[in-house]
Length: 242
Image (cartoon, rainbow, N blue to C red; front, side):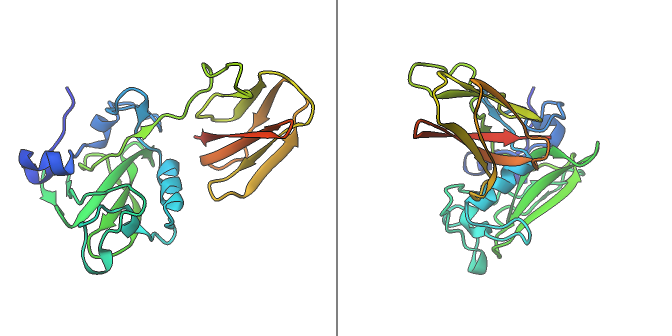
């Protein structure tokens, strides 16, 4: 039975703000980063790296944490913390519930869990404050009740092969190695891997119809693999997890 808490303990707030969850309950007692937890099938609880990638993609920064207004729904926050929602993330200040069952911060802050733990007791979370543009990345005990935004799983590529596909890419997410498998193997085939801000991290000519690429040296995060076959380029997203 999924346990959840209404903001301020008031069920009437659930439609507007959503629920608050303790980390273990949210993750369904599975400590694997990127696990499905209570998210619907085909979705998962975001990792710390995915949350960071989202912040950067929305035009913010992680260190120092800035750009929170871009993540807030219109009408959320005030003064220097008024939401612009240019990202479409539409964060609502649902507040939180502490380990003693006391509610705080409704309309004053939004706190979102990630699925990345720092140790057996704590996990990373991100806080948006109503009065300022900052984004705080902290870790606290899993007994606290915070909100969650689920992330749609990246395609594994295992069932994507068709006559119109240039290649398959698997597994995805990946821990150490990813495979590029070409539908056909024409000449003039290559790939590049870029980070979330578009910097090329790795590039090579493809000499086999199935190429295995080591990503051991890559930091955890979101990357883009672009394969060019006879001048035609197809880009796919991949998540590296640890």
